[in-house]
Length: 341
Ligand SMILES: [Zn+2]
Image (cartoon, rainbow, N blue to C red):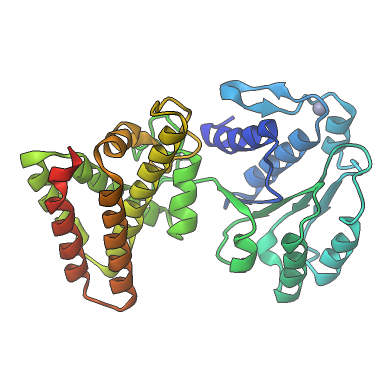
């Protein structure tokens, strides 16, 4: 099992264990056979009567119960598999599904619907599926799978939790915590942030965004004299393009979001930041820095940062020159450095 498969399976295992399964997932991977295998494994897990403990806290289908055996043979009455008829998934197939999901599952707690090559749905099939997603039946989990998410309607995407097989530019899977060619610790939240919120599809784009993020986190984390050096280091890559500015604002926003979250949780736990943040933070690999910021920055300063980022976003929307936006941001960040400690 490759490390990244375990990442997606860890996310699914956690959701299953905590009873917080989403109604719909979209599994994105360009490699069709690997994707199909993974989707089938997830379906088996969700149907299995007695899942087993797997590596790193994940769960695995037992493989021997009646549910597992029926799922393996694709004869489980609560497993619906929709595959393209010819080139595309047809409206009739989704209409049929609409009728089917009304009823309770026959054998287990839930029904699993696999929609293979979801990107092959035309507009009418997509809109029919959207109706199901808008009022999801409580006992049904939809597992959409696709080579790319960009061909799907944004309204469908917004109703799915997207799980991706992220790959680095060298084509190797990005693993969580293990050394990879990008040398970043990527958790599911970060992958999701990069590819959903920032809408990065291309591996090079993801790689560049990670490099930029590294510089920004380095800059934010520096103090005193080092901060000035970090300023030049960061600004040298910042004024490149409008897209870089857009990424910068989004990345710093994600840091501020994490800091807010830590403060919120700390307040709830009476100041002790000991709770498990790993499934909540986007920039989990910089947790130490985030906690330091959460403890060092007062609420008003954080709000000021947030407002400044909103202003930058408004400037981006108004097509203000990239250099002006980065200068405004960096000078603001540099000036407020004294408040961090
Ligand atoms: Zn089983």
